[in-house]
Length: 90
Image (cartoon, rainbow, N blue to C red):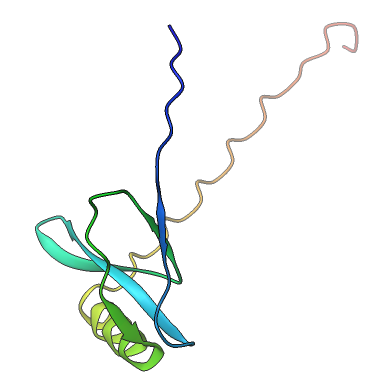
């Protein structure tokens, strides 16, 4: 069964140019921020807090100091090709 419904979304943008919206999310027991230039909110959703570009950069720099990117895993060495034996070429 397919039902059509009308849903109202509200678009939130920062009050001033060059500002960001952010949401605090929990990741592995720690609070992390997700930054967005705008968001669509459902009817009863709370507005996201705002911050300046400088505040966003400062927060990300502090996060990166305590949460470095993991080292990429080395690429596996290619397996050698099996030797082809030609029974007609003795």
